[in-house]
Image (tube, rainbow, N blue to C red):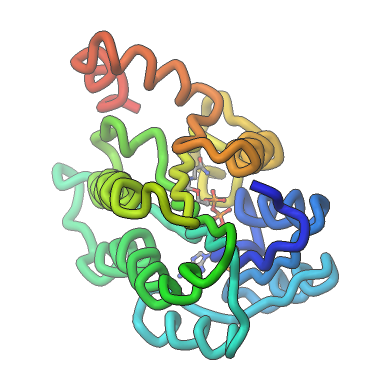
Length: 240
Ligand SMILES: NC(=O)c1ccc[n+]([C@@H]2O[C@H](COP(=O)([O-])OP(=O)(O)OC[C@H]3O[C@@H](n4cnc5c(N)ncnc54)[C@H](OP(=O)(O)O)[C@@H]3O)[C@@H](O)[C@H]2O)c1
């Protein structure tokens, strides 16, 4: 895909992986609109040259806010990046059902709602793309974050159906599967982390080459092993 001249919407484009995707697409000549909530990060996004739409995507009001912000403009690329995840363990405490619902909304409902709302517009564009950011944990879950892993596996499944439906149309569907990346989401986690910039670079490269999947960093190896020994990947990932 030719990035220059495209109008792109990146949800959660004010920080982390989304911000790096936005910056790299901007540097390739795209016009970028980002969404976020935090006022300081929104201001930074504006000084980076992005239009920033304030929207909490844990409910339908946030979707309405994004659509109002876009007004009549036709985007070419939708990057469903905003996401969150909390760990919990039933052996230690009960989860907060409200927190679980917010996670399910942000990680799964919001991408589906945005795709549905923007599909008619995307269909009018000569070259369009939908990018859904899932996770290596969509391939096999960890025990520590059951709701997060379930939302990512569901979004992966949705993305695969969507790609099959849109095959041969002007809308390309890309799934981006990051590994552990050094962002605000993972500050409490140890282990080797990829930089958000390097992660975004691999996602943007997959966009440019119209790949079906961006298997970022270690996820590439995970996918390869999963072809041969899925049981091994499940065993490794469940303890992750
Ligand atoms: N980091 C990793 O290791 C990793 C690994 C695999 C997959 N991923 C996925 O990659 C995506 C980006 O993750 P990240 O690590 O870059 O996260 P991050 O650094 O925490 O950034 C999240 C972005 O989403 C926005 N956001 C958070 N909650 C939101 C809400 N309720 N409504 C609207 N926007 C919200 C944040 O802005 P505000 O806070 O201002 O709203 C921020 O711009 C997510 O889908 C995540 O699941 C991350």
